[in-house]
Length: 91
Image 1 (cartoon, rainbow, N blue to C red):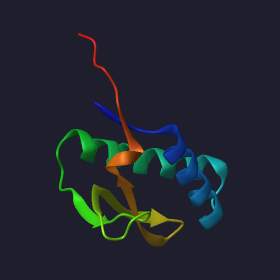
Image 2 (image 1 turned 30 degrees about the vertical axis):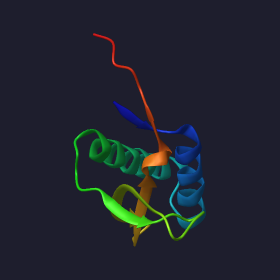
Image 3 (image 1 turned 120 degrees about the horizontal axis):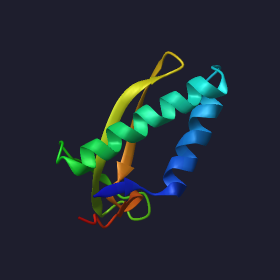
Image 4 (image 1 turned 180 degrees about the vertical axis):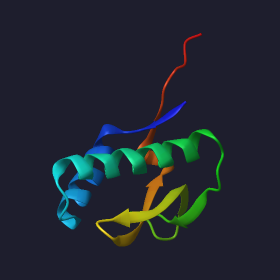
């Protein structure tokens, strides 16, 4: 099972806070929605996107994209496969 790394979630929360005029509760709801959608995509083999790596543009990497609204504006949030961590599922 894949989960977004805390560093990615924290950066996303800061982005939402910076781009929204909503209150903290609405921002937290938006964050949870985006995180849930990105984690669902990673765990259920929803279409992966390919894009140039920011550190090395000649290398491509994959990830998952969520298009949604933050305070009425449409944003595309992309989480690279490096932004996820694998969790062991105990049965």
